[in-house]
Length: 186
Length: 314
Image 1 (spheres, rainbow over the protein chains, first blue to last red):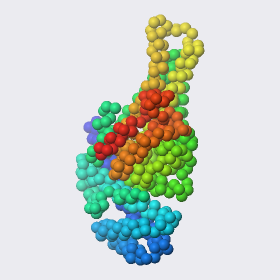
Image 2 (image 1 turned 180 degrees about the horizontal axis):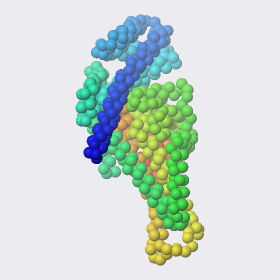
Image 3 (image 1 turned 120 degrees about the horizontal axis):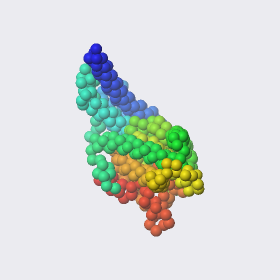
Image 4 (image 1 turned 180 degrees about the vertical axis):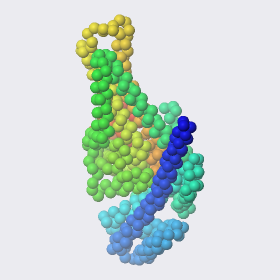
């Protein structure tokens, strides 16, 4: 009789442990998914800010059509790449957009009136912090992936991960020349 | 500082996580020590005044109520004491943007943001958990720091939120307050004749117990203060390294701390009780000034030179 009770207790305890470990795996996988979508939120924010910026700069620097067009087309390229869903392609298009924006701000340096424009300054601050946020969102994604991969690969959760098909996730790798957030100093 | 130096210098990323785990463990140990100290102070109080079990129970209830009140109101009190106002308006857009970005990196909800009209550059974080947290900076800080430096400072403050230092310091402040109160009332009553008229269980043993209890009540507040300051100093070093883990850019905080070092202004509306909240000690620690030596003895922060040296080695 006691033997039965002990066996039942052990089984119940084991089931409880398994359930708790399973839940924590699901939670950390969801965190990875959520942090990935956070990157998209920030990217979209950048797409929304760019038309305003282009309009503002146009008012002061009509002769810089090439630079402005480069930004506009880089933006639409990035937006198509995002819808395409290919991560490598998207990273490339985003890098091109960052580069186009950098040269736009470099050009703006030559127009004192533009630099004094309140609207422009505000957009510049917004874009700088959006760039930071994109970098930070990627960083948080990688941190989440690190935590998730660690837990599905280390004992004892690795046994559960194998049984329930928790797969390893990939890190977001930046372009070689831009590791870490880009720091812009004013 | 002896053992903390080795642990405060993270080299690899994994070390950060180990540090945070250790920090939580240390918090737990110190809080347990505070509880023990309060209970012992209550017993000493009781021996001196002879209230019996009822006295201990009353002291315990008072301590609980104080803890409860401070748990829910500490942030409001800290903000009110320092004269912080909500950071509304376009001039604080950069402040908001930096906090939002770093919160994404840390996976934290955005805290409420406040500004203090004060030329001395400084900042603090308060609250009971990340969901109920608040950040305050002085206008002086916003003025003298550039974007990267301000980001370093804010990352340091958000680290206090992330590591639950804000809760630990809140609880520590209350515990120290409770112990000081017990000690104060106990000693006063004892001196001014509230004690038992004749030690019924008397004899030499009773007298010795009374003397020990009295000595304990005198020493307990000092012990509590020292514990609070030791805890705070370790946390500052940890917050520096977790802050850098967020920005992945040590030069930002480094150059901010160097600016703080050259700035000798002190925050006016502050007291010793709130000192441990700030990024830099808000009290006057200059050589030769009245009270400066005492401020150094009870330092809530490790010296800036030491923090700068650690950041430079990253």
